[in-house]
Amino acid sequence: MFRKSLVAVVAATTLALTACGGGSDSGGGSDAGGASDGTITMGFAQVGAESGWRTANTKSVQEAAEAAGVDLKFSDAQQKQENQIKAIRSYIQQQVDVIAFSPVVESGWDTVLKEAKDAEIPVILTDRAVDSADTSLYKTFLGSDFIEEGKKAGDWLVEDSASTEGPVNIVELQGTTGAAPAIDRKEGFETAIAADPDLKIVQSQTGDFTRSGGKQVMEAFLKNTPDIDVVYAHNDDMGLGAIEAIEAAGKVPGKDIKIITVDAVKDGMTALADGKINFIVECNPLLGEQLMDLAAKVVAGEEVPARVVTEETTFTPEQAKEVLASREY
Ligand code: AHR
Image (tube, rainbow, N blue to C red; front, side):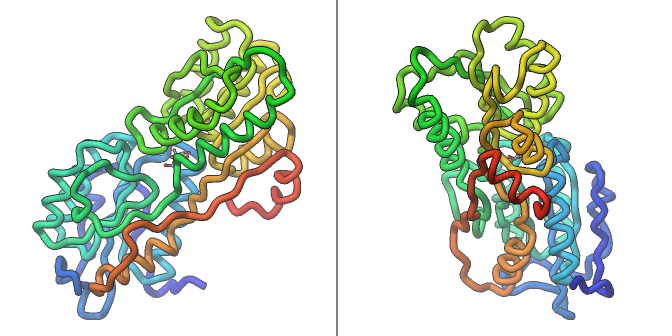
């Protein structure tokens, strides 16, 4: 049960630095930090609200902070790196006890991470990684193995196409350009489908992890690419957008064109159970509790593992039907 008496201000807001301010009585900074009453103040710089996954992730972080009595300062970067950097700088200025963030893209974080380190504020990466060579700039990285997710998607297709003669034309809806899940899910998928030379990615473009992006890019693919056999979408939302485009073009998603996605949020699982998606690789957004545990340890100056990988599974339509009613997000 959540401890309502210790509710922090956790409203999701668009990034306004004023929204990041106030409320902290933290002494800030040191590895054995926290306020004198033991309350930890966390600055959390979220990517945005681009997908069902992200909404579930935000809810998980906010609810877990409330349950743990963590004073959460939350900002929504609207998928812009500059907004996340501003938010992190604001958290440094406010001397929060710990900063957690899910980087929009992998590159370009060294300067601001050094600023946090110089201010002795520990940083936790959650969901997405950075490509900084200096791993001392953050304490730990909690999240999925995106390469493995891409491999699972590709392995399924290799098996599913085993009895098919001739080329299989795949179109790929990539996530946000430069984001870890877009880079890694592409890499993992390509590695897996290399096992069958008939499997070819004939088009690949970003849909920015959004439903509207997936729909728009799929509409273009359908106009300019003959004989699309498979859509590989880096998340459910783009896959759901692609379904709308496929149906509008008079084709049957899941039959005329097979669809593979990543996430397994409720809308995706519903489409899977309905046969409109053929296979989903799970990416678990419920990272809040683990994040609060790691934050408490890091603020107390305890050692934490450098990498905490989320456990995940995959779903076929039959499996989706079984679990849909009890799906949490
Ligand atoms: O970083 C996780 C990815 O980001 C999810 O797969 C996607 O839905 C989200 O936008």
